[in-house]
Every structure is written in C-alpha cells, then in structure tokens.
Length: 572
Image (cartoon, rainbow, N blue to C red; front, side):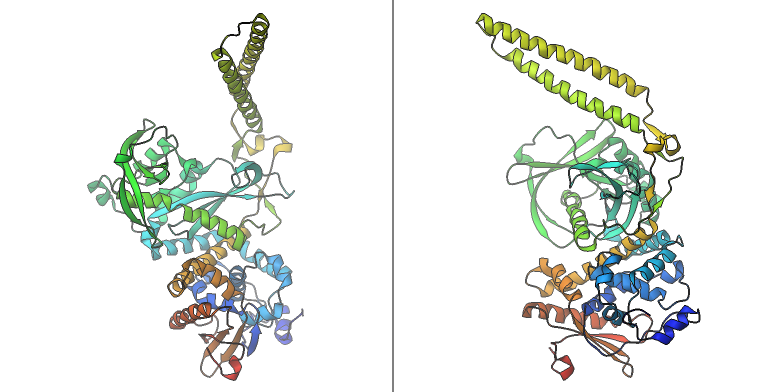
C-alpha cells in the first residue's frame, strides 16, 4: 500500500478498477509541513490551474484523480519542490493532508500519471487556451509583448543537440532555446521551444507573430487602421538579436510596432536636445528620464523613431521603434521595462527550476527539417579565425609603417626584415582566406536532417511533459505575482513581498475541517517578525473575501494567522 497509507479499502478498489477516484477526506491536523501552500490555492485557481483541464485531459480510473494530480503539481511549484525526484525527500503523509488524501503518489506513480496526461497530445491546446484568457484578462498589458530566447543547456548523453551561445556562461553549449512571451511586468503568456539555432527573427516570423495575430485581444479593425496611418495592432519588444530593418518593415506592413535597441550607434547627440520626462512603469514605479528624439531612415528600408536616454555619466542609450503614435516617455518605458523579462528568467531558474530536465526521453525530428550544414559551420569558423588573424597582422603592419624610420644600418635591416615577414604573412593569410571563401560557396548552408552524416544526426528532447510542467510553473508565477501585489501595500519594504510568500508557503499550518459549517480553516503558524505577521493578516482578509471552495468538496476556506496554541483558542 505504501508508507502513510490509511485508506486501504479504497486503494484495493482502485487497484481492481472499481474506483473512479478517491473522495477528499480532510482530517483535523496540526503542524502540517508546508501547510502554507494552501494560502496559494485561491490564486492558483484564479490563474487557471484547474480551468479547462477536464476539457483537454482524461484520467483513467484510479486512486488519484485529475484534480489531485494538478493540485499536487501546483503545490510543488509554489513550495519550491523543483523536480519530481525531490518528492522522495518529502513526507508523503503530510503532503497528502493538503490534498485531502492519506498520502501523495510516489515518484514512479506520479511519473506514470504525467505520461498518461502528456501523452494525450492536448497540453499545447490547454496552454494556448490559458494564454488567451490571460491576455483577455488584461488587454492593456497584452498590447505590448516582450519576446526573448532563453537557452536551456543539456549535458546528458541521450542526443547531441546543436551548440548555441549561452550569454550567461559565455560559452557555446549544447541545448534547446525556449522563446518566452511576457508582459511588461514579467508575467508569462506562453513559451515555444526550438531545437534549431535559426535565431529570434526566424521564430518571430514563423511561430510567434502568427500566433499573436490570432490571440492578442482588442486589435483595431481594418477601418480604424485605414483611418489612422500611425495606429498599430500591438507592439513587440526584443533585444538587439532581433535588429533587422527588413523585419521592421515586414512587421509594419502588418501594422505591428517594434521596439529594440539601436545596433549601430556612432555619434553622440548634443545634451541640449535632451529634456526631462517623468515616466511611469507598469508596476507603478515613477522615475525621471532625460530623453531626446529624432527620425532616422534605418538600413534604407523604413523610417523609424530613434529615442535616446542620457544617463548621469553622459552615456546615451539608443532605441528604435515604429510605434509612431506613442508618447516619447511611454515609448522609452516600453523598452526599458524589458529588464522585467530578464528578472523573470533569473527568478524562474533559481526558484522554479525551469531548466531542469523533466523526462529522460527523446523524440524524432522530421527528415525534411532543415539545419545548418556542419561542414558549412566548420568552414565558417575557419574563415572567422583567419579573418581575425589577418586583421591583427594588418594592424601590426600599419603601426610599423607609421613608426619613425631607423637611422642606423643594423636597425634598418632588422626593421625591413620584420616588415617583410609580416607582409609575407599577410599575403599568405589573404590567399588562405580567399580559398576558404571559395570553398564555402561550394557547400550548401542548410541541409535536411536526412542529408546529415550518421555521426552528425541528432534527436530532440521530449517536450510534452516539459510543456505541461512549464505551464504549471507559469500559473504558479502569475499566482505569486498577484499575491505579492496584495502584500506590498502592507509591507515597509515592498521588494520583500516574494520572499515573504516563500516563507508562507513553507511554514507549518493547522488544518481544521468543519463539515457542519462547511468550512476548512487553515491556521498558519506565526512568522519570524511582527511586521510579517501583520502583512499576512492583511492577506488573510483578501483570501477570505474570495470565498474559495476547495475543489472537489463543499468546504469554504477560512484563513487565519495563529500561534501554535491555536487549538487552545488563543488567536492572533
């Protein structure tokens, strides 16, 4: 039956196929480990943890039902249990009490359940439906979308994934790239994974933009676009990797605005052009920026607005945009808020483990898929190496020519010999570089998977289970963000809201069901400081006002903050 099992008859019934799923049975429990995760349940439900799951997933008969599995995944995310294997070190009976069961499934059972759910091929539809709902819930935030790639490195031996540059490690490593779409405060909408190294522009053209054109709410009509030549459907914000005048023109032809950093800044504008603007970010923060603006014809393709920010040390940060009807301050905020997405990546890596491998399995890649030819990549690397060496030798020769000619005969001979050797090396490198470039022309840059040599072929990591877990983690992050917004006004240091939530989720709590009153009281134990307790007390008021009912039961939550002697009636 497994450790912690006390509902043996129901487990036997589930084993012989006569139990659809175990009913919830909450018992009077004291000092439940990680009991504070129940404080996150209302926010998890509001953000879609159980929404549309019955439409897209089915679970075979067994002790653990669909609701129990998804609730467990949500609890794992907010409690910072970053992988399924980590459940081996958690008390199964204690966590089972949070689900209204005698224990949680063991790791092998949970993996089997996830295999069943992810194998139905509906994870993408479920995630897409949630993404649309999130966008429709806040159309203003969904009108400006932040896109960036995050490399998920792989050090295993199941397959030889293509190498790509990882900026945080400053190395070329094997892995996959996840392209995330977020809003201005870092909340995620969806993620698309790619095994190929085509880059951000290719992903934007082929997958992200077509999906956004369908999903972004409240886009202007054709009549509105025709009447206002500067009006856009929505805006995309990305870093210098997406810099392309041709792409900017393509997007504006679709009436989609773009924001990015200027890639080629060679001059400085006079400080007299800059003026002070008070700008407000999406999170409510207000600052003063010194900004200036000019029109610029980029790459001979399209006229764009160039906006520069002048810092206190005199540095000028240049951004380009095709958002022609947006105020200069709002346009600057739109790009500089991109750091919220960088913070999101860092936070999700450290707190939610988005880079962790979920399953040890691979999937085949269609033979018609195109990849960079390894031979072309090899020649390209040699050309770059030769070109860099040739540049250094020419620079050296230039400095030698500009030096004063020696007067003594011995010095003249050594000088002429050095010049001749460097000149000879330059000639040799130039010939080698030309030969490599000619050889590169004979090699196709892209070939299909079927044309790769056997030793160069690779498969991709299985994605369905990873996609499901990423969606649950997105829900958990959005739930935590909404709870942090509730806590901040009650805290002296607003930046500590997420840290306080992490403490809440891992704090012990007492669980007291009352079938007659139809309530399920969650009594959180006191935290380390009085200020933290007061902030949590305000959170309890908001959670109680939501009147959340535990899924699958008729018990309404009652949240309280009490000391360990709650059962003796001494409340906070």
